[in-house]
Figure (cartoon, rainbow, N blue to C red):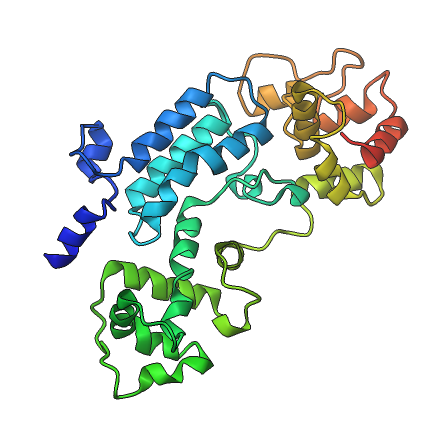
Length: 313
């Protein structure tokens, strides 16, 4: 009861599932993080933004309202599901996602949009305060409480935290812990590195450890390299798509070409199942992306290859 009262006093709570489903009014003082996220994204949906602009809105104005609460409160699965639905619905205007979510979460230099992963960001925020548990000079009240619940398990991961195993410190040895501490211990196991060996204990560092590493090449990049029979400078290609004097429309087309998701006739017929011909209007061959931009009559694959390698699709 004491913990629940404290949560009310500092106004840290996600909506209950019933309130989240029906959108009912909340009591004064409670944090409406989820509803604010959806409201902000709906407001910006009326603007004409590029994918890069939308990703910046998601990371700065949208999901940022969740982090204060997520620092000390677990994010329920239904909240993560609803947040993800709002994020991807805003990014793609409620239409079919042309690029996998895993690819969109990659950094810019790897072909992604740097769209934040809410669940992993919430875990990284909780890991930020874990180093204080192993700091012998820290005398904050919450640290003593955390040491009681998770000090002993943490001492097994961190060599310099052996003092947490001392019999002089009270410790909880059972498996029944508060949900937030279960989440912290699971995140520590996933990181799998002694925190003292990390360059710093920032949220950015923990987030990078919790998210999957970026692949060396995306499948679409390998397809283009096979098509031109040469290696391409993809770090420059991805970095230059949104740059120079290109308009948003031109940049979006360039990005779709690079990812191989331009809606050609073959795409519309095979994936969408539309009653249209999959033949190229210029030469009657099957109109795939590779054919449309490299082999169709009037298109020089050599010129396109040079343009790709220099400034970019």
